Amino acid sequence: MRDTVDRQRRAFWLKHLHQWHWISSAVCLLALVLFAMTGFTLNHAGSIEAKPRVDHRQATLPPALLATLDARQKSAPLPAPVREWIQSQWHVSLNGRDADWSEDEIYLALPRPGGDAWLSIQRESGEVEYELTDRGWVSYFNDLHKGRNTGPVWSWFIDIFALACLIFAITGLFLLKMHAAQRGATWPMVALGLVLPLILILLFIH
Image (cartoon, rainbow, N blue to C red; front, side, top):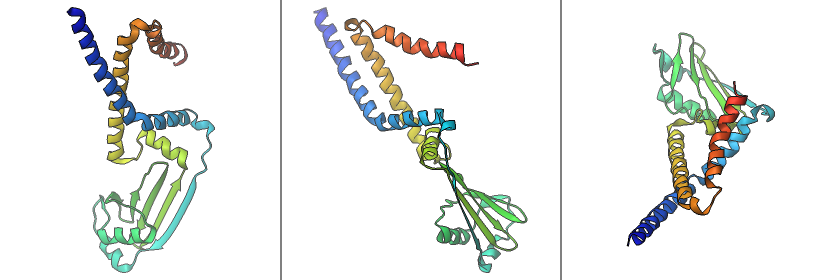
C-alpha cells in the first residue's frame, strides 16, 4: 500500500514538474538564445568593431513657435506645437520627455539602444539642431541585454524572462533529483557546475 502511495506521489510531482519545466523553457527559449548571443558579443566587445553613423540636421523654428519658448522653467517638456513641428520635420519621437532649459538654449537628450541622440534649440535665434548616432545592430542588441535606454516595458520583460529562467532551473533541479538514482553522474555534474565558477573566481579574478 505504501509503495502505491509513493508511486502516485512521484507520478504527481513528475507530471507537474515536467509541465512547469517545458512551459518555462518555451517562454524563455528565444530570449535565452538572444541573451546568450549578446553575452558573447559583450564579452568580446573590444574585438567587434563598431562603425557609428552620425546624422546631423539643422532647421530654424518659425517665429510663432519661437514665441512659445519664453517660459523660464529649468526642466520641462517642450510645448506641444514645438514637439509636433520637430516630429513633422524629422520624424523624431520626443514622447513628452523633459528638456533642460537655460537662458540661451533648450537641450533635450534622446538616448536610445544602440546609439544616442540629442536636440538643441537656441532660444534667441530659433536654430534647431538634431544629431543621431547609430552604432549598429550589435550595439543595439547589447543594449537590449543590459536594459540600457530601453524603457519600462522592456524592463518588465527582462523581469518576466528572469522569473521564467528561475522556474526552468529550479524545476530542472528537482527533475534531476527525481532521476538521480538512475543516473549516477547527476550530482557530480551539478557539483562541477557549482564549483568550477567559484574556482575561476578565486584563482583568476582579483
